[in-house]
Image: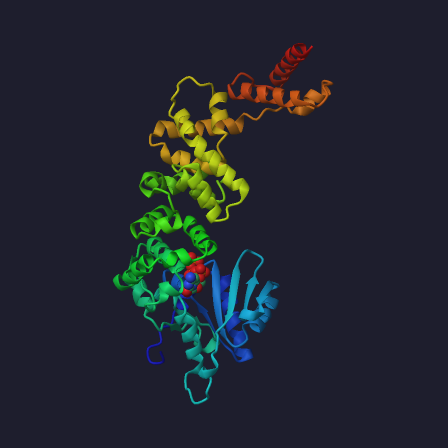
Length: 437
Ligand code: CTP
């Protein structure tokens, strides 16, 4: 530092929204008044250098981070959630934007006045604890140094050279979830894991360290992966690097690869069709990952990641039904009525629709899927149970039966207007009533 200061103030101006930039400048000025040094660090710096806007910003304060967070939040009427023990605070702004404030942990031995560079040594320690060089940069926010890049580990060079590199040889041992993070960053940006880093990664995998990580933490990393457009490729890389069996024990990767490779595109397609977004994303992926597995294997994976009961049931329904649904959409068997097709399809949870689309590999079937979904959406009867009540029938199982029959007739295109619907219902009710006499 010092001699060759690289200032990214201009890049910040170009990539950050005026609001975020305003907040960062304010943070710098508040820190100035309190006599603190303050930096934005981690992913946000990486993203700025890549010309991308970050949703989360991490601040590192050399001083009392919680006090600073409170001062900053006051200006924006934002909420602060503090964690006294860790000296950290989250500032939650009204529009989903979030800032994490951390206090750079000052070790006592780092304080002797004789040491000339106390302030950078605490920041250095903070950054040295991080996962990869591209995530271990900081940018100064104090007014006099605003925009100065702090890059102890040549993160900028690695960013330019498209390289994911750990800071030291024990990084993966200290935190094995970084194995998944390495894969995520590598594939998100189309980078390469640097050879030495790859060696450390492989050694960590071979030493079975992953099986000692809590499933909860792995689950969190998986959720991040599933939200990435490149999730399919990341899963493929997990298999390539022999990580897969730790994460999804008993699940055969190669038989689901084709579906996984198409899954994100399929999901996007469904959204583009104007359909409801299949959510949560992790369930969409978990269904695809487990769709060829036995129910026992699927249940075990669900248990491993503490999947809730309702989602587990949806997943098992999907495992049971995907094959038949795909057949229906491929028109095998032919000549099923629309209502029959719909009934089969609707046994599947909506979260499995991307899988279904992903495994249909001909355009006609895909188009049939779209049309069927449209028909289902647009065939909601205009008449409700209230009409039956108005006819004087007491509420009971017959309501369900009539409404189901009505819905089937609608799907099959036999009823159009409200009058036609009501005529059908009167007719049906008359028949049912006669039957029960
Ligand atoms: N970090 C780490 N080891 C982990 C998790 C996080 O060292 N296992 C560090 C990294 O320096 C990272 C920072 O903590 O930049 C913040 O983590 P997170 O918000 O998870 O990641 P981002 O880098 O912001 O990535 P993303 O773009 O996916 O949010």
